Amino acid sequence: MKEEVDKEMYDLEHIQKKLIQLQMMYELEEISEEHYEEQEEELLIRYEVAKKMEMEQWENMTKRK
Image (cartoon, rainbow, N blue to C red; front, side):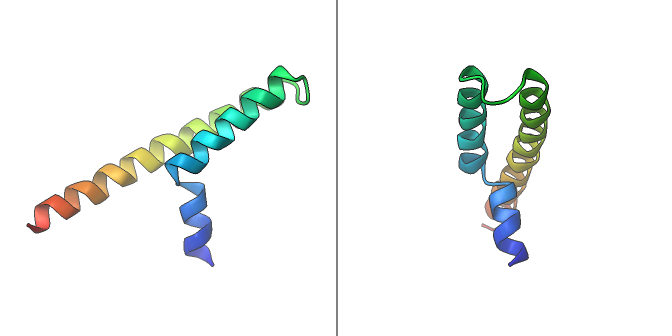
């Protein structure tokens, strides 16, 4: 179960979809600017972590050869 949560937390495609969804909700005035900015910041941090994790996995895969 934890792996599934981690995968969703740090899945680049999932994070990108969440950012788009968040942007749409803000534009439709379903959420406040403050809420939008808080959520966006959290998602961008997760995105950066996910990118680093992806790069580390790639480096590890290429080192094995």
